[in-house]
Length: 162
Image 1 (cartoon, helix red, strand yellow):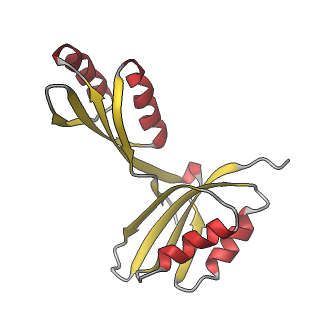
Image 2 (cartoon, rainbow, N blue to C red):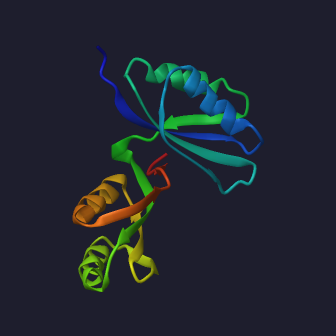
């Protein structure tokens, strides 16, 4: 059995209706599950960037790249190599916290450079931005608390060098 690994690709597309649908349908039809998907404008309002995280084999990666390049409205696609790219993700997490627990939580939040964005008598909402590994580490630190809700944006990334 071929081993799958996680890949992150960045796709520059025309900023038009249904382009995202065409790209994601291609991945779905080929049997790739999308783990994370982000779409954003670029410095050119006519172009959008789609960042997709998915798993595939070394043998199937060139095939999905080539098929994506052939889609109408796709300008370019490239792999965001781990050693030559920056990845970021946003996490919002709502934690049940009484007054006594807030001071301890605040220490964790400061260590991870997060911030408290909402506070109620029984809970706290924390915002944290960073690499997916940093966010996973922060969530591990919250294991002793009751997490009420989590929302993650998905990975976005950019290559360091051209």
